[in-house]
Image (cartoon, rainbow, N blue to C red; front, side, top):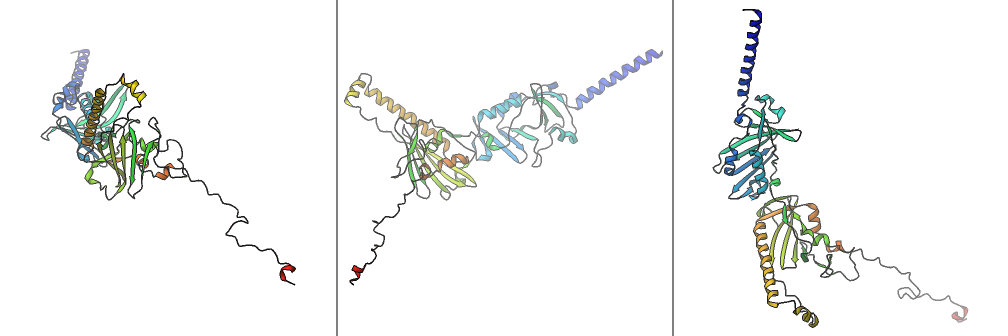
Length: 398
């Protein structure tokens, strides 16, 4: 055998050995994953079986549970969770695609952020999917994120596999329970509020009203004699507080003692007969409210003058007007029922700035009283002692 042939054989052996090593390495690195297909095989077929989702990161943990078509947050007493946000997360988990396997050595996990989560590990995030029986569908740890052009990539490790994978996709799942709840408590249009009645826990009471029926500005209903408001619309911050009332946290109502920690009660009277009542309490260093609604049929519009009645008669049908009025009342009552169903049994922590607006005192709307004028006492002041003229010789009788 000549030297050239020997060299060729050796080169061939080296290539075959390298190829074999590569295949073995890929196999040991879990290159299967359907040869770089979906990270979580079969999740697309089982996504509707997911009945619970746990998210753990650092000291935070959230458990989301499904009942029928709705989801709730376990750590907030079963408060309703945002369905669309959970649906979006599950879809993104289905769409995770393996780009390549990385390390399978535990000593390298921390570099990629896929070490086991714990109170002292702020980076890794564990997501656990369970079915209705409580059995795990999948358990994965999401680590560091990186970008390659427009591609977002993640390091992920499945709990039943030591292999770490670089995957394409996005998992933006927060372990803070409040990120999964709907923030809106109530939202009213600015023109819906007619009057507001306020009663503080110490007994102070006042009401707010519009300047007139067509005005969008609110003022104190009973301004004391000799006082004026600070400026036009001074009471707007209270009257429009429900234009968007949002929560910072929520808990079951019975966990907040509203009676012992009462601050104020407000009733927002709406033009269509609806009422929204708020009770405020200071508890656990937060401002809490519980909300109720009721309805009272508004009075019929005032009868028009004879001239107006004659002009309106051509375009008006009393029966149709009354039917429209009743339909509007039924719609308002339906809103009240929906509100109470959503609010019943819950206490909401609201932002500090909103609590400040809702707890204003009547004096906060009034300008300082004019300074009292001080008069220089004159000779005609009855409180001054009588000053007699000096005595003369005639006065002495000499």
